Image 1 (cartoon, one colour):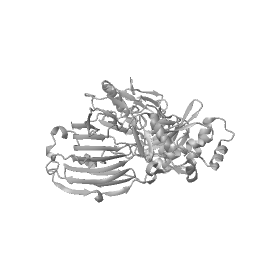
Image 2 (cartoon, one colour):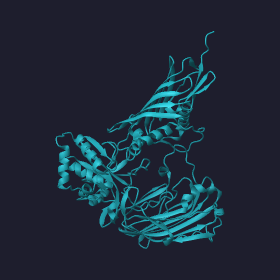
Image 3 (spheres, one colour):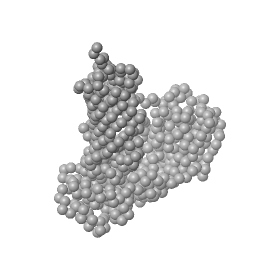
Image 4 (cartoon, helix red, strand yellow):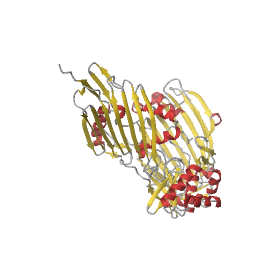
Length: 639
């Protein structure tokens, strides 16, 4: 499911022709005040957007933007590109490159820009295209201006205004102006702004503006920039899209609009119905039926994107998915619901914003905030979540791609907000056991068993799906970062469940793993322990601290040390606990065997700035102990 994204990062998509900054011949870099240069890689000299809404089905959008790129980190803003499709007609586009003094070096028009289809990366068919052009300069600073005019047909999705899309961008002036006819139900939500509303020729004019905003240094463990940046969301209370009328006053309204697009597309052919009954014949448990049909869908179909016209939101028929054995997220989810319906199991389509680090949905403002579709099925009082585009996930598990976020469930009443499963620390576990020995030459021979569960197994599950056994072995050797390391007997055991797990076992040989110097043996266990980057002194913290996942880790190292060696100094014994997590490490000798146990827990959450010194101490402790080298000394032989 896609909709044109208009203002995000370095994407320049909509422009305004009404603004002409007083630069003389062009933007002069020297005119930028020092307060806006500090910490910035790019300065937005001017960005004015005008949206003229003519009716519930039509708007004209103009934008002109001027960027001055100060260093190589801002070069992405010299690439201008815009998307267009059946609903977005690109009328005009112009780009200009300037040197530091504002002298025009190059000018391009719409026909000079490259024109590409967005098909690819799983998208089979689409009418969406992109025009782009990359300006470059041999010296800094330089400036780029871009302006365009777009005619939009269908107002289900209106642009989002992001005047400062990156903390490394400083802003001289950015302005959004929306004109709407008298009585037009424009809805909006502003983040950090006061708006101006005035009457104009019987209509209304809405204006938002941002001036003289410096670049910001993003603090470690800060919330995502999307949670902090200024923005305005827009929506039409009433609209028309592709011949379908809709309203956006409530989530039920939005669900009713989408229901029009889905209506009648869940019909299965008789052959498919017979297949369903054959698959579940003799099975009485609904959860088991869901698992059987979901596994069949995963084996019998594959994902491809189909995004033609209103097809960005409308699935094609379930009978077509059955015949062609492919579909996009909407089509596969709609097909899954149809299969479950035939089995007598209630299931619903769910619209969601996907992505491991996707911005959180704002449930307080009704507008299109979705880019994906999944399914929830009901077995008694249980909800079973199904990601229909992934052929490997077990029934009931969503992964970091769609877990722990709000979404819109489509039902008979239109729709309502639901929250997908959140995986806690007890679900997201890594348990690692190293058991072996080090000989007198410092060589390691050991078996390593690692169990991953929940979100901790997501990355490995993806690698198992796409890498050969040879590639897996090479990848594991690289991840251990041990020189002269050989891996044998690499094996995996997977458990498909609502919280899936993978057990990895291997035999390790590492020549020269420990350093022998005279009577001393130096051993570093970092590759087999929880690690963390060190953090410079706590300093003054301005914003909240955010930890994005709850995880647990338990590491056990059981190694026989060469005979005659004893620890020089004390073995590790340290711990710390706070509201955001806990850490404890302890070591002891049992005869000639070292036993080292490390436990780590992190609690997902947003914590006040006052907790920053504690968190610095927490991660620096983990870093210190993970990097610690243990020293063993050969005991003197009795005289």
